[in-house]
Image 1 (cartoon, rainbow, N blue to C red):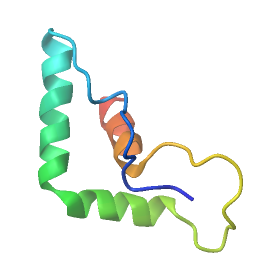
Image 2 (cartoon, rainbow, N blue to C red):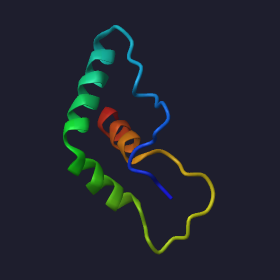
Image 3 (spheres, rainbow, N blue to C red):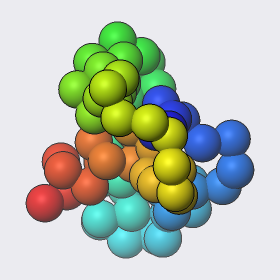
Length: 70
């Protein structure tokens, strides 16, 4: 089952000291202030008709960050 957020450290929690690191930090702050966005993404990603098997996968926040960075 996909989680909205992982409680463990993510690739988006440690930012380097350059322009892209600052952008990632700001993106994370905006998403943290807008939990409704993550709920919408999670609702889109989670298919209730599929049984939970295998690996958990990326959290909804990580999927959204990847999409926005792409």
